[in-house]
Amino acid sequence: MCGIVGYAGPKDCVDILLDTLSKLEYRGYDSAGIAVFDDGDIKVVKHQGKLAYLIELLKKEGRPRGNVGIGHTRWATHGEPSDINSHPQSGKRVSIVHNGIIENYAQIKEFLIDKGYTFESQTDTETVAKLLDYYYDGDDPLNTVSRALRDIRGSYALGIIFKDYPDKIYAVRKDSPLIVGVGKGENYIASDMTALLEYTRQYILLEENEIAAISAGTISIRNIYGDPVDKQVLTADWDADAAQKGGYEHFMLKEIHEQPTAIKTTIMPRVSDGMVDFSECGLDDKKLSSYKNIYIVACGTAMHAGVVGKYVIEQLARTKVIVDMASEFRYRNPLIEKGDLVILISQSGETADTKEALNISKRLGADTLALVNVKGSSIARDADMVMYTHAGPEISVASTKAFTVQISMMYMFAFKLAYAKGLIDTDTYKDYVAKLIGIPDKIEAALDESYVSQAQHAASNVTAAQSLLYIGRGFDYALSMEGSLKLKEISYIHSEAYAAGELKHGPIALISQDTPVIAVATQRSLYEKTLSNIKEVKARGAKVILICSDGFAVKDDEADYVVRTPDYDEFLMPIIASVPLQLIAYYTSVLKGIDVDKPRNLAKSVTVE
Ligand code: M6R
Image 1 (cartoon, helix red, strand yellow):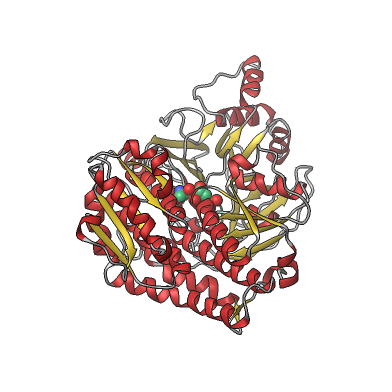
Image 2: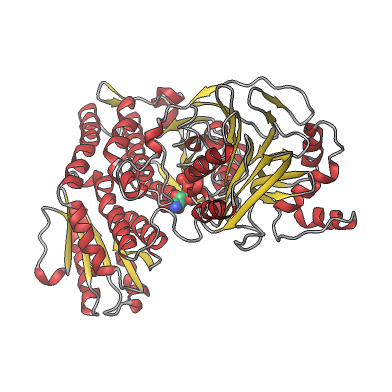
């Protein structure tokens, strides 16, 4: 949710803090701030709003000079976005940056007020800064940090500096990500590796409640009892360009265009002799076919990938699949047991609800499989089995390439399971895999040819709408949900997705000439049915944008605008047809002048409940 960085080395740390913060702004952009050791003191500068305002302020009022400091970009939880609530938050001898939520901050605050402390912000973070101050006795700050941690309940990643230790940064995490970047004569902390790719690719993953102390030339990591912990230095395999816009106006557009490569990179290493190979996580045919039920648990776009997965797996492999929103799953006492498989899908691997769903599933005795994009993330580490999607860093808040690689993996899973259960023969199996392999080229060609202009045209037809509906049947209903989420999060236009057959049971009352309808119809077997629903909404004045395959006949009075997808095996169409839905949302956002990559109120990685 929030982004944390820290630098200790020989260079001017303000430049590095601002640059690395710019890479983390997708995690939150309500305010930004830095704290730097300058001439024997800690100098804090912070400002409400995007990082650009902080940069302006530093230009106007002068910047601190120093080689060690911490920085923060905020997604507000406790306290509105304001200068005062921005991080760093400070006590007399300590400044901190924080990602997460301190659940018992009110009690801690009360305790500290009793001890004579005063508070100026509404944040939970300030209580941690003052608590550290309270426990600090001038001795080793590590003791102070571990003492304070015993009082704190909740989730946190913390970057901490103590006035008396001007060469050091302390870092600790629980339920929120934080890594230590390992440089040559300089070291870093960061919420995630994308911030540091230009500086180093070596990093150390901090485990829960390990406390790191870094300076330019040293890194020491201890557990909460003060014992040293040996850590492995890992190497990131994403290159620095992957986290740049590379000539595109927005990350979202770049990431949409990266989908053919992302899909290839994800599926090809898992194809062997024309069949699916999941040996990387020990999921062989025997084990796979032994599961009674499959649960897919995730949030947002990842959950929609699960819905596509349900349709695909149930249709082809005839195993029951239950899809759950992680935020509901965790509180509904799910009927999971030994012998079930729970698949957790997450781009970031840090989503708080999905993480808790994983914990619950493990406690209930199910096998857990994480389908995750970020290597070494919490969900990837905690699940029994992990399969990585290889989409590269996804920076834009709106998830695009993560979705198409997730659904590609759902297909691989279904093919393998169907074969393992003896439901398809070898030729059919290989034919499906070959068709999946053919998809990236289809998307690539469509992106080069007509997808962009068609989506721009469609977007110009919805920009003025206050509200619109997405409709579809089967796979197309799953895609409608994702299209609708994408549109609402980056264009601020209200939209809902309905199963087309459900319209008559209520939602059709919403239709008027001011409510455009985006109808998704990629399944030939359901096309006639969806056309009937389209007629019903048109009869009530709605303008219809129809997304359908190239070969489908559409009469003039059946749609106001038609977006054509390439013709392909309809069973695999969801991967191909996701792309125009993403592009329509993107161009609507652009036409409305919205900051596409950083839509209001959102953050990329939701590490708090
Ligand atoms: O990192 P995750 O895949 O776990 O994130 C899940 C959702 O927060 C995410 O997909 C969100 O819905 C996106 N903003 C959608 O574009």
